[in-house]
Length: 165
Image 1 (spheres, helix red, strand yellow):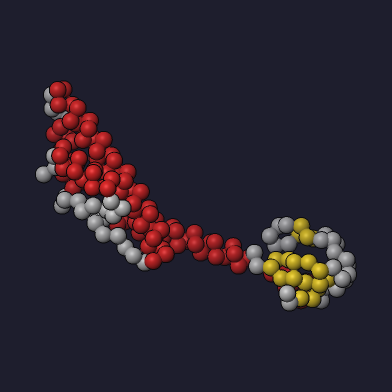
Image 2: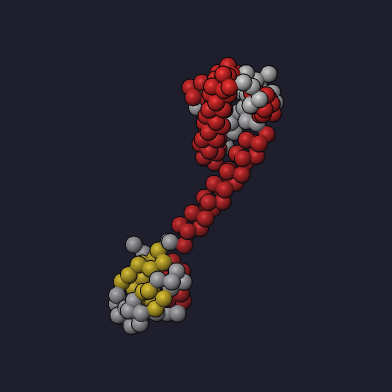
């Protein structure tokens, strides 16, 4: 059964630790029943109702922040936090999936930004690369760094020669 003291105690536990606190079984449904019951109580006890709501909101906010941090740690280390509810586990899994997808995008962007140094073998007018950036104009004998895909295209057309740095 959830009480004002239970919420206060769990709130303190969440505040004092980086780990998720162990919640009582049926915590969220019990809290809902508690608030439903307390909302019908006399006004002299309304301070308890408001304080309990603040404690509950703090519990939710702190657990959410911890789950976000644990998701980052999970992507780096593979460690899964303990004491998550079913809905928190689902939230955690979605965040981990999003972080992994973002990491994949970052990796592909890094690959695209790889550059090669080339020597220009013939005069080239200004042109737009696949990244929609403008390159050139170049004169015969110029040495420049270009994105890998642009450099490879110029080398394949015999307009440039790769230089090892």
